[in-house]
Length: 134
Image (tube, rainbow, N blue to C red; front, side):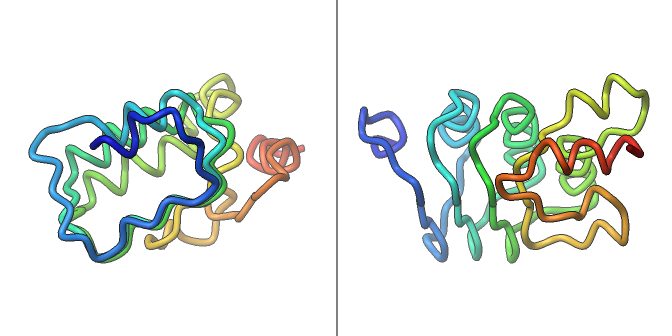
């Protein structure tokens, strides 16, 4: 995708309802892993699948700028949801909680009434503290 590989910076990218299918491509996750100044990525109403979301979740662990990613109405199952959940709240150890993404809100999934579902925007430090119980 040439828009993601260009030198242009964006605060918002809206790819909603584009019939997007990555066909195994990694353009979106590669872009997110570079930690661009992007604040909102709208990917609603496409055909992203669990494989795509697993790559996106991995990229979110390295991204400190994205505040919101919108993913409803894609082909994502519990497998993809689990990967996203772990990107923003992996409770397997104290270190894994500390290593989670603390700035991004994932829109389109209900993770339940837990700290992982707290919208954080620019309050990443506060969100991190709430996740680890301070």
